[in-house]
Image (cartoon, rainbow, N blue to C red):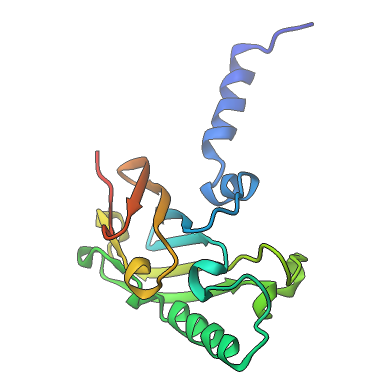
Length: 181
């Protein structure tokens, strides 16, 4: 067996390190009630937050809404998450405005192309993009998921920012996701 040359090893390592956090999160997806996973990328003029969560964290159920009360709960959750600038409050120094929001949950009729069954362990995932005049200056995001919803108890976050890459955990009631060197 031939060993890789040093330049090839360096290239392979660079490819792994350069892999976007969202791609890593997709390969490590786990469905844990009470837990939300966030991948935060601060790059150029944008802050993008990728969220993975069991649907139950937001609605209290894990299936397509069946009753009028469940349908109303789902509509309320969707509206709250679409107003992401009320939930994710980025460091004011970054001067960010909410951009595109994409929510994915086949159980709720959002993005049916992913093939997730509408029964069983349904998720509600989202991508929240913010356009900023000074994104690189941001040092924190106040995450209002604990106050907006009853289900989440813990947030596991990975952050890629100009200051470096960080892993952080938040537990109720703490909501400040901070990073710096």
